[in-house]
Image 1 (tube, rainbow, N blue to C red):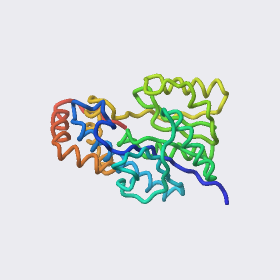
Image 2 (tube, rainbow, N blue to C red):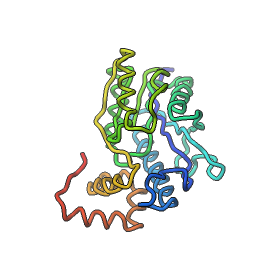
Image 3 (spheres, helix red, strand yellow):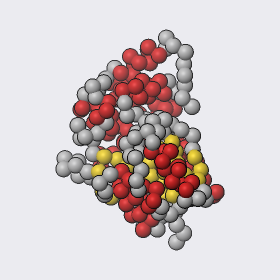
Image 4 (spheres, one colour):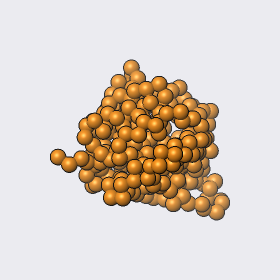
Length: 244
């Protein structure tokens, strides 16, 4: 059987005080956890849909909690495995290794922190890996990290001695790729929702109906809290800066 591409989605049990804590005090710990849950549900929904259309296999790499031992709460019956490792680099490396061992390739790993990420960016990553066959595809995030990384084969050196959780992650990874002389493609940048100012940018992105359709759980949650209505109203008084 020919190898098929795979997309691995990194998610974490939505437990208050363990997820999206940088959004506090703009949100409560409970609200931050609820938002993380909605991000994951929306991402799994649209990624699974794209996977069916594109013939990809979709996996969940899950960081569980005793109260949330499985990712059943995302609403999609997908194959999953627990994340393993002391830091993000180790968790990424072991996730790639596990999926490659199943025979899937190329493999793309992405997080759920970018709820309005244009789906075409993910499609482009998979298509690049399949047809142009760079060894590495990176999707940089505006905070200096990356929202997506795709590989043809395991490259453990890309996850070692990287300053994780800093604005230097993308540049450090790109430097490592260049030092190893690996062919690389870089996708357009996008933004993560990690800090209070990112919530305003998220509200602004929901001006576009397709963004609300892509992230219905998130849009509904922010609307319920009154956040979306408040910020879109204030933004309507300013020139629109739509995110494309």
